[in-house]
Amino acid sequence: MTTVGEIAAAFAACAQGCDLATDQGSALCGAHVAALAHDRPALIFAVRRCCMCAFCTQECAAGVDARSLFAAVREVLALAGVTTTDGFESTQVDTEWHIFSVYRAVYGINYLDLPHLGAAPEQSGEEGAAAAGDAGNPAAAPDTLFFPGCPLASYAPELTREIFAWLQACGMNVVLSEACCGSPLKSAGLGDRARQFKQALARAITAAGITRVVCVCPGCLDELRETEGMDAVELVALPQLLVDAGCQVNPDKLRALAASAGVGQLPPAASSVSDDTAPLPTVAVCDSCHDRAGAFGNPLRELFDDACLRECEHNGSDALCCGAGGAVSLVDPALCTQRAQRVLDEGSAHADVVVANCPTCSYTFAAQGRSGLVDAAGTPYVHANYLDLMFEASFDWDTIFSQLEGMWSGEYGPWVCQQLT
Image (cartoon, rainbow, N blue to C red; front, side, top):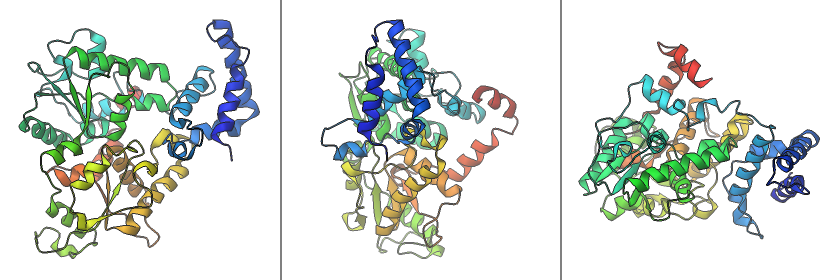
């Protein structure tokens, strides 16, 4: 097994004797990296198989930040030409067309009628507008940015709108951005592009006078926290706002979800029937690897009745990767499946329903289920995102995946292929 220390030492050795401040020195370092890749392909494979979840950092005696280390190593590999953008064409979110913007365009999903960061009156410059997404109607002196993240804004527009309206009802002068947090660029080794993209977004946020950003995804909050220029902006996890507002999970939706899968306290035939006297199905919260400090997971647990909560062996600071991290599916799909199954097995062993606090985790679990992933007994896993249980609208994964597949061969198929390949 290749260790983090071995990888760090090997790449550090490539830079020895190279003046990286000069083109000649950088070229020499790149040649050393290319030679390393040729001589030790297993080491490069180990870098590509890392999910960048920082789990190993929790046990590291030296306190090495493994996520930052592997992001830097991937960037070095890309700069040296060892790795390319092959396979990452659809996730280059700093371009006009990527998987999320194409999906929204094909299916007519937009938010032009909502107050939008890209049209905030204080903002100027095309760069900031490009980072923030398509412009909509301007809002007067907004103070809050709703940052739904790519899966929510693209795949669940009704749910996105419902959350936006809820924030408005809470008295926030809120605007929207469909921007990505830049994480896919980092996974591809495009570190410099990721930094430029995120800094442009930060400039757009500060120029609009935004003082608070509400995130539904731990990964987005994590990326924004690390972005230069965001120091004066408060980053807020949506579950905390829900707790502060006195909200609780919709018990009928929880019962219906469990009953439709034949688990919990209600038989399948009762899935559409409200029974306030029936015990709630048990729930295991799946913490995102980007939420080790609990900004989402801690308040999320407060939204449930204590009697129905169960804990997994790995939670909070010890959270496991859902399988999506680091875009490992491009080099080792089987490993991604194993990681997803490991998390779902843990949750299902303790509870009727596994609830994810991250839309990307939910997407991953749904995608694996669509590919036939089941538990040891051959039963599909029962899982949901916390948003599904807090609002009337939900992620409709069957429709989402059907549309994702259909857009490649439908009316817009040739255009989609042109933009994403």
